[in-house]
Length: 135
Image: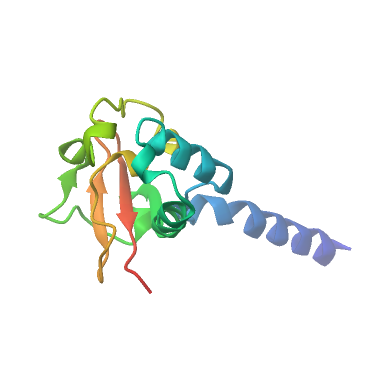
């Protein structure tokens, strides 16, 4: 009976520790909201084709603390996300001072078309946004 309790404890710890060490993907329920928010004042970007591009971009984003993204220290070339506000006229007024997991990456002029990982620091936090390379 003692081994069963130990097994249950190990399984319990394994299950709940997954979230502690995981990279946080963009929540699937937020994808449509982010796309709508990004296109609200830009009718020229409201199409299924653009939505598909945005979905692909969001699928490659991870937001987490630096060590959870696989980095031991901050690389020298990391820029603050606030340096990349406003991909075009539609996004110039975006207020990025929101909770980290509510941050809409589509509102920034980030380097999504990349063949290597790109890292941005989320201002005034210990969090970073990582864009994984295109497959």
